Image (tube, rainbow, N blue to C red; front, side, top):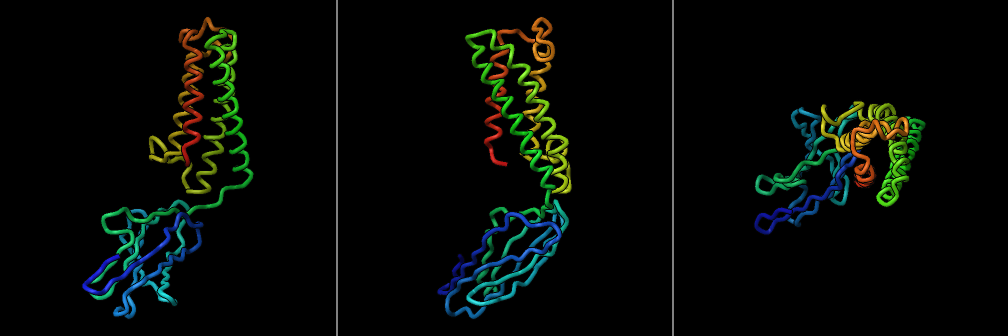
Length: 247
């Protein structure tokens, strides 16, 4: 809200979180103002990626409701936008405020339902094996025989997680955003990066305990047998923590 002498104006808007690729987006806003302001001018500013902001005068419907439209964009397009209401040159309101980050949303495609179901099923299968590996690693702290199960269970979880994250995950990402991978080293997407951390950790655990994982032969392991339960228990904990962090 901004005030100028006795005049005041408030601009309210519910941010858009996502939009369907190929469809235009209607942006709505509500303006409340003092009685001496007849009808403020409201504008929508938006841009895609590195483009300059496009200015769209918003149309007044009734009861202080205004709307403007952002045209359809291809999947994966990131839209940055903000709203501005003006009552002369002395009273200007921006949402969000000029010193705050602008609103953003993506135009998303629709992933194939069968691929999405397979992705979810396989990734939960991987989580099941990772948790089992952590369980036997925990038991292995007091019973060395239980340690024999953890590396093979970790290997099974690693294979399933690789299938869920790489071929299936990349297909879903491409169908949704138009890019198969946006994590390290080409981007900073958190979901891709946490999948990469999980994959690398379990791949390293399998490599260092490859004898136990592949042939049930601890003699060819590259790390001490006494460290095995700690490695796999830590892997299970790290995996669960990353799973619980929202996408």
